[in-house]
Structure formats: C-alpha cells, structure tokens
Amino acid sequence: MDTEKKKLLGMLFSVLDHHVYGARIRKIAGSMHLSLMAIQEEFVRYNLGTHDAIGNEVYKSIANRFVLHIHNLIDGSWHQDRQAVITKFVSEVNAKNVIDVGFGVPTRYVEDLVLQSDDMEVTFLDMYDSAFAFSEHLLDFWSSNWRDKIFFKKINMDLDNICGDYDLYIFQDSIEHTKNPAKVLRETVMGAANNARFIISLPIGPIFPRHYMEWLGDRDARLWVEGCGLKIEKEQSVYTKPEVDLFAKQIDPKYHDLYFLCSKQR
Image 1 (cartoon, rainbow, N blue to C red):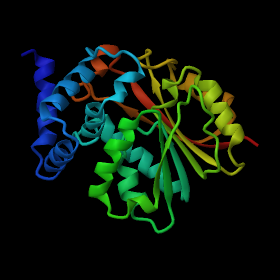
Image 2 (image 1 turned 90 degrees about the horizontal axis):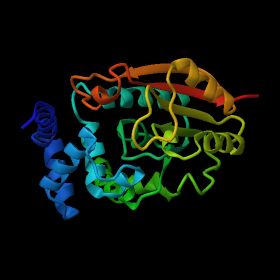
Image 3 (image 1 turned 135 degrees about the horizontal axis):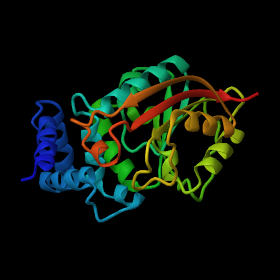
Image 4 (image 1 turned 120 degrees about the vertical axis):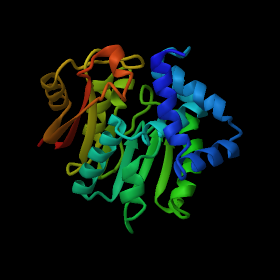
C-alpha cells in the first residue's frame, strides 16, 4: 500500500472508529443499504483524484456524500477550519432566512446555530438527490424537529435562477462549480433584497477538477467579488494543511479558501 493511501485510510478510520461519529455513520450507511467498503473506496478515489467521474457528476453518488461528511469530522483538517469560519460569519449576520447554495452536506453552523435557534430557517440548494437523501438521515440524528426549519430545493445553477427573498446567501466552495460563475452570482445579487448579506468562499490557486473558474490570488478574488455587485465587509483565509489535506499536494501547498462576508453595493 502506498504512503498516501495509507494516510487516507488512517484518517478515514479515525472517524469510523470514533464512538459517536463512527457509530452514526454505520447506522446511516446501513439504513441506506450502503457498505462501508463502498464508502472507503469512494473516499480513496475522491481524495487521490483517481475517480472515473471528472465533472460534478461525482456528487451524484450517496457514497460521495458520506465522504464529504467524513471530511468535516477529520481532526486538524481545513474542512474543520472552514466550518468554524462559516459558523462565525453566520452568527455575526444574525439572519433569519438563509439559503445555502450547493451545500453538499449539512455542516457545523446548522447544528450549532440553526437547530438551536427559535426563529432561524435554512434552505439547502443542490442539483443532486443524493445531497437531500443523505442529509435527511444525518439531520435525524441532530434534531427530531429539523423539518420545521430546514428545507430542500433542487436547482441546477447552470440552468435555473436561484434568486429569492433570503436574508443570507451562502456560497461555500460552490460558485466555481457552475459553468458561468459571474453570471450566477450577479443575477443572484441583483435579485436579492437590498439588505441581503452574502458569505462566499473562493478557492485560491490553480484550477481544480470540477471547477470552471480559477482565482490565482486574493486580489483577483476581491476584484471579482466586487465586480459581481458586492461590497466586502470582512474576509478570512483558510489554508490547507498538506500533511492532512493530501489533495493540496496535487495542486499547490499554498492553496487556500478565501472567505468573504458581503453586502450589496449601493
């Protein structure tokens, strides 16, 4: 077994062997008739970049949603740091009606903020049924009444308009998966209320598989966001840790996400 695969499996089983997370994942997998071996194989393929699916279709599979969730549970990974930034920004906005565009899987802000609030709602938007199927099972563990405040909306951002009356729009590593990111963001900003806020994360570095746009530096990202009609209020970088986030070795050790908290330009 090569070194990278061995490291990946070690990280995978650090989650699967966890007395809470591992037991939960096993129960969800069983209820969805998915083997742990299928999850393991998807985890290795996805993280080593050896997947047969080279486009967004990789996210169609239920196994991939388990992989995305497991990423969020790996100690010391940038995925955990990213969740912390999103949770901080969401708490600062104090929004009541949120849309999470291309959400992937529910993350920490949902468990820590949305489900603990009396008057906060979130709409999860994705183009694949796998996102909703996995999320239903995970949310059942987080709350018995999640359906009162969490809603699903199936939309293909390349084809459909996502505008709506929301206090907060979240694009966490999702806008670059559309074929025309600037068009999607501009139209969303134009259709949003004047007091709407936006949280956007952009990958900074060489273009990555399944992405349609690249930003090679922080300045490029700032100019692009402002060019889409947004005013940047705050920003924060989240750097990968190549010893944990092995995918970063394949592209650039300095690869990072740049998070923006924005409002509409007036």
